[in-house]
Image 1 (cartoon, rainbow, N blue to C red):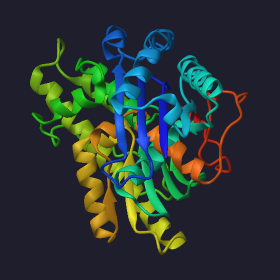
Image 2 (spheres, rainbow, N blue to C red):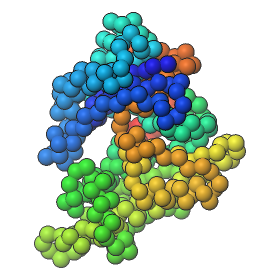
Image 3 (spheres, rainbow, N blue to C red):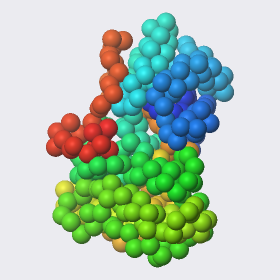
Length: 357
């Protein structure tokens, strides 16, 4: 089963070819990705119009690169999978229209993939994780804890009531003048800092349930900066604040995930794995903390390779293959979706990060 995946939901334009019936480690036949970081860096964040125009300029070239690297023609494909949402709608439309054109011309099945489901199923691409498993999905726009019961079946155990974790990383990095993207820059600065210098709050820690909150932590960093002596922050101030913020966020997330593990084990006693995915899952201290939690709970800990934590097309192709095995394909008139919850029955949250999900 050879699947072409296309991903254009945010600021990476990507195409990949996946052989879904190959052994793990051999499934991703080719990948082509173009990051837009340089285009968005002057603005300190993603500008939707710039992102959509860049996708439009480069998507055909990247698809051609992925197909050439795979040594395949469109006639060799079994299906085309594309991110159909959620995401920046202009970019999503570019990918969807490209995929529809290829599918229509070459008479191939088309699979509309939920971007979040791409992240959720990546551990099965990299590690063959069996259902059900507990997933912490953390990125710039999403922060959720989900029980992954099967393809297309997700039960949300917790979500953010305000900012997503990656959003908090970016905003704090901007406050400290660490550059964009904020997550990697802040982690690098934190390596030189003292995480005990500033006493920052651990939002939601100890409270019932599995929901997150990061807005108050972000505000506390700003207030701490304002209390420091006037003038530019010193390099050590920046490093210590970065380390203190990162420690507080990881501590808060660990507490929420620990609650979720308890709930998961009650609901799914045969579940065997704690999984993390999404861009923030690349954070080393967070991975270490989650691994320790999994060991304590006697669960396997699985985190995909770093290149598949951030947005990529291999995960979209794989999710398409998982759906295709179950007979699911989309008609050519499906519409892109800027909002697409994995668990439509979960209570709605007014938090920004949760709404994006």
